Length: 461
Image (cartoon, one colour):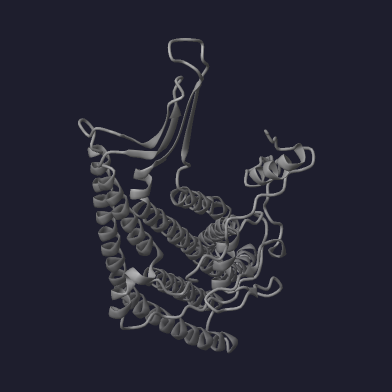
């Protein structure tokens, strides 16, 4: 008696098969810019990492340069697109860890006639790609190392964005100081020029006294305009990293940079274990090693093996194993092996070059910092001395023993010395930040933001 599966019994089977299938949903592109109009609109939550609980960066108080760097790591639009590479590497890992499906072959031939023929013929076989099993471990190891390499590379890109944001914040703060100095200088010179012009109009001075001051005022105006334009450019660059509208402004706290340790030998020796770019190259090299092992294994004949069953038209039934394999006469995967070896050699050279460059940069920054520390100290001392002299000049001017023109010269000299000291301090702090990044210290050692979840499709789509 023949039993047929009823429709109610088929439903759970079909539901089970369809449950594991992917479905499509539309994800329409945005038609509007996504720039934030204030700090409160940014992602300001630092997720928990390395045992540190989650924190939120305040938006109602001056931000440190390190906080600004972390905000850039969380919100930079370019980083958001780069994080898609992590999803791509994760998909490659999933592909590598998934074995190929077994293959089923079915055949049927209807009986039309012939001697000894009494029944239709049937044939069925089940086969599996054995080579996929042989190369499985090497393939998975390579994919895992590649995923970890992409993860480390993305962390290094986050570091680069944070470093750029910190340097821009440092520069913006310096721009503000220089603009204040320039405004004071222009105010002093303008007041002096107005006084000379009044004396000239009264006939007490001739035009030769006015010309040098007019030139000094014009020069001060030009310097102030240049400083204000530099500040505008730096603000716009910083806002672009943070995903803010170009016109947004927020207070920046006075930069505090921790000087690097004086003994750098131990930090340089451990660079390969801390710098994300070096770690990424090491993992990429390990992935290339695994790919080479896989390529070597694939030089052996590709084998497909499995059982088969057949029944011919005379009702003779047979069952047994079947094997299909390549004859390695022309192709023994020589091209794949050569390509894998070349890739490994390239990564070997890239890692060595990056390690050499990192060590060289550390030494270069160390020497620059030593020179800048002396230059800054000398400039700061000169500014203090000029300020002391200017105070004496102001006292002499109040007693009538010094004219206003000489007093203005003393005061503008103080401002120029302060500008020089500010420039040296900014250069020193910039190099100290750069040295910290070269040493792999001072920044989070894990990704702060994962690839964003795509928005849900709208009902209309």
